[in-house]
Length: 243
Image 1 (cartoon, rainbow, N blue to C red):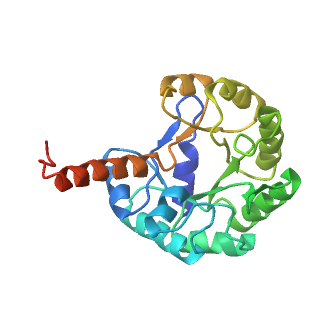
Image 2 (tube, one colour):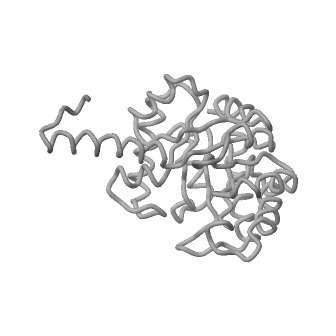
Image 3 (tube, rainbow, N blue to C red):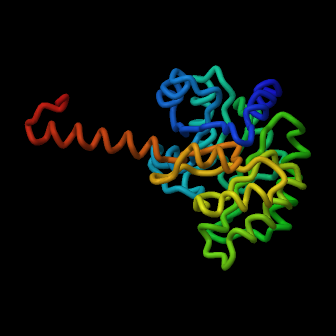
């Protein structure tokens, strides 16, 4: 497990980002791995939806860990697990659960029950996770200032990100930061930055800005559902679904 964490950590290279088309089950894990990606990441929104629950810790922790374990079992590359806000577990217990299923890393957000955590309190939580994990987990600290209506989300993200990196996070993730904010975030944060690549943005531009990791969240899952919807609609209309 420590070897997998070391491999995952090494893949975070500013300007040559780790690309993570997030997965949600064993089948999607195998497809992404076979496409040649050197690491995998789960997406909580996709996993919870696949299980029949809403996102943001709407699914029982047991089911989320079980789903992540199936992904890890299907993989031969390091897997980082979207552990949402930690499911209310104590840091040592959270780390124990993640290591028990073979996770090489985890994504931890700073929103709890719909409210943005105080940055100092989140930093303390991350420090406790780091203390429990040692080097055995790559910690990606999600920053939710861009989705929580914070007045100056860039400045707030930099403030939080610095605290999170000082607390032991390996990487910080200002989720859905717009492209025009990414250069300032990379410049202002003394550690690897994880960005998104929504429609209309360029991977080349993200790399040029110096990001070290690019996540796609539930987009692969949603595209898969779109394909199934089209397939089912054609069958219902007595049309050739393979056309």
